[in-house]
Length: 208
Image 1 (cartoon, rainbow, N blue to C red):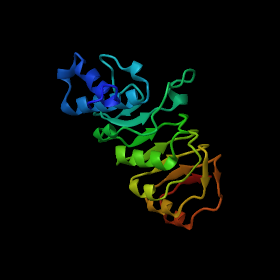
Image 2 (spheres, rainbow, N blue to C red):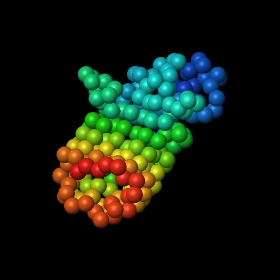
Image 3 (cartoon, helix red, strand yellow):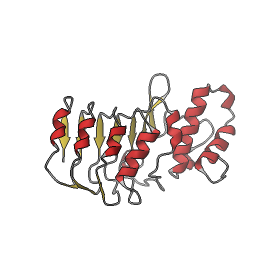
Image 4 (cartoon, rainbow, N blue to C red):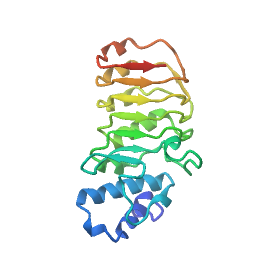
């Protein structure tokens, strides 16, 4: 956190400047820091202010107030202006959000990264992830990840429509034993499904 231009440094400085800081419990401080780091890394730090409610901005929370989902879907959040930018590498500080089970970054242009790197980043930042949304993300020409899928054993749903994905659905999809659904429409994928999909006994829908 030495670099004053880093998202982490700026998030920490913002948190320290909050006049209500002493009122927050330890986990709430961590939550505010993690979310601030994510927003600053995504170039939307203008949304941060004193009294900022971390359960109203780009998130949904459980009854305890802990963040369960981060949604930086441009269509849902801001239909006219979108977002100034989005970092395809999710900050590791998201691991502080111990209840985080959903990340949706649909309609953010991620052409500078590969889907493999993004999925690996999501696995590292949110190990309990159950829902991953990245429709219309226009990844740099990429294929569906293979070994990275093994890191998402809790995944129940993923949405990757129209995201410039080529190749085939890998056999490793059979490792996602809790998967209930996936959508891969409007990509350039081979329509032949891996036989390992037959292992997904909880699967309710899947589209290519």
